[in-house]
Image (cartoon, rainbow, N blue to C red; front, side, top):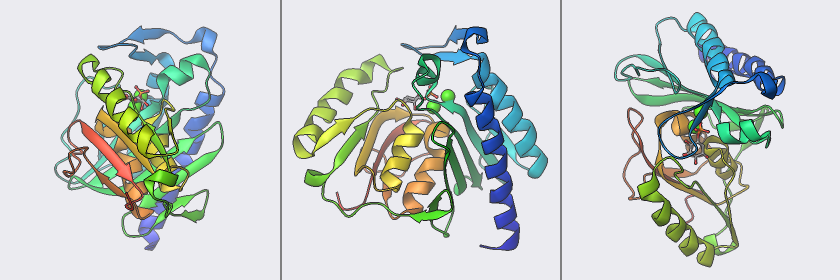
Length: 252
Ligand code: IPD
Ligand code: CA
Ligand code: CA
C-alpha cells in the first residue's frame, strides 16, 4: 500500500475505533429516540453523537472531502473529489434493543468511485477494511469470500423495513433462497451482512432497497475479498442514491 494511503486508512480506522467506544459506553436510559419516515425507523441521540464525532475527525484528516452522513438533513454531491459516506450506527434498532449487532460504516469515494471502506463492529472488536486494489482485511488479516455453492451456503437478507411496498417481495425472495441454500439469516445490520459475505461466513446477501451509507464501505470490502456486488437486477450499484443490493461470493 502506498505510504499516504496507508496513513489515511490507518487514520480512518483509528477514528472509527475510537467512536466505537461511544457505542459501547452508551447509556441507553439517557438516549432520546426519535422516529423517522417508515416502519420502525429510529434515530437516537447516539447516532447523532457518533456522526458528529466522525465528521469532525474525518474532515480533520482529509479536509478536501465532502461528508455525507445518514443523519444529516442535506446530502452533498459525491460526484467530484473525495467523499466520506457514513453510517454512524448501522443497526440502530439492534442498538436500541442492546442486541449487540451494530456497526460504524465509513466509505470513502474518489470521483464517485469506491476508494476505501471501513466497517467496525465494536461489540466483537471486528474491524473490516479495504482499499481499492489492495484486498480486504479483518483485524489485519486478509479475508476472502468462500468457495461454496449456494446449496452449501448461508443466505442473509435484509427486510427493507422502511419500505412497506417491498416487504412481501423481500420475504418471497428469501423463501426462494431458503429453498436453494442451507438456511437464511437476518442480522439487522446491512454493513455487517456484507462483511459476513466478504469473510466467507455467508455466501449471499440481498436487500431490495438500501441507502449508500449502508453499503458504500462494505461493498468495496466484498469486492476486495473476491466477491461480487450488483443490484438485485444485476446492474451496477449506485453510490449517489439508493438501490437494491445483491452480494455474493461470485460462485452463485
Ligand atoms: C438498516 C440496517 C438494516 C437494513 C435496513 C437499514 P440503520 O440501517 O442496515 O439491516 O435492513 O434497510 O436501513 O437504519 O439501522 O442504519
Ligand atoms: Ca444503515
Ligand atoms: Ca444508521
